[in-house]
Length: 354
Image 1 (cartoon, helix red, strand yellow):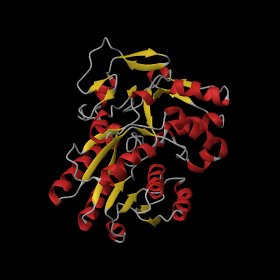
Image 2: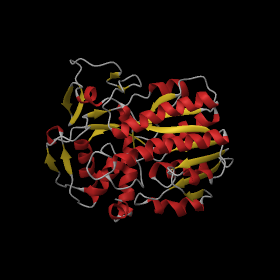
Image 3: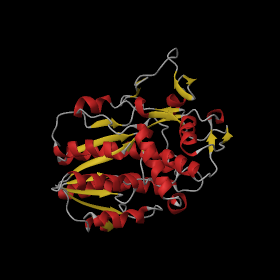
Image 4: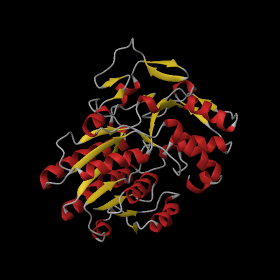
């Protein structure tokens, strides 16, 4: 099987490529990247040493994709993943649409030409902001949890959001580009008889993740704490109680491999792939973990609210469990320790990749 990965030199793309090469000698992996993210070049040589063919290409350019080798399956791991992209006054709204939506169109056209299967790595940020922001919360053990006495909208429980939670706008420009990409992928699959899988991912984290908060809060926080760099709790009273779940990309890769090996399985084409309630923690809890590992470090507080911010995002992946007998195997503590060890071994990581 020949697999092509977009964004192959990013954190997720490179982790997937390594997993596939290590797991099955019968898999041939190629990928492309435009190398605009700081840190992407670091992964090029390592992947090439494993036999991965890496091409410099921009998914927005039709001629770049036309020059790529034929593949049996394409995994779209390229995206501008910041929820503030296009609205923060520093980035272009047109550019995020070109990267995340029009880029998907280009890849789908490639799949159509080569009759290749397609996997979209989507996001938890396709869900409606107002009902997420209004979820009834209380604080327990320095973290927001759902208030069992409050009224919950459809598609959410203590186990997390399900795929049935509202996706009504506003969800952010980033979330909208991914939601539209999902719909286009499913339509292309039906129209041109292509196998398509849509995987909405929670926060992915592990060693080697680039050192920016919008590209991976767990890695950014641990690396910043290790280097005694300034950190700040923003919004929600400046308490750090906001919660996210966490998943290692190797756990994601196990599911992708199963999907590619069984493309005709008669199940729902869209599912959550996330750490869930068992692998969720707040920023303040993460600070406590860092203090035990590295020693104390002050964290500033800023109660100012930011656009599209939400207090709690935990995803229920029970559909993936039912459909694929899938569940996370790499624990949250193992992920944090992996990041911490990498931070200790690479003291200049933030300067290199941020």
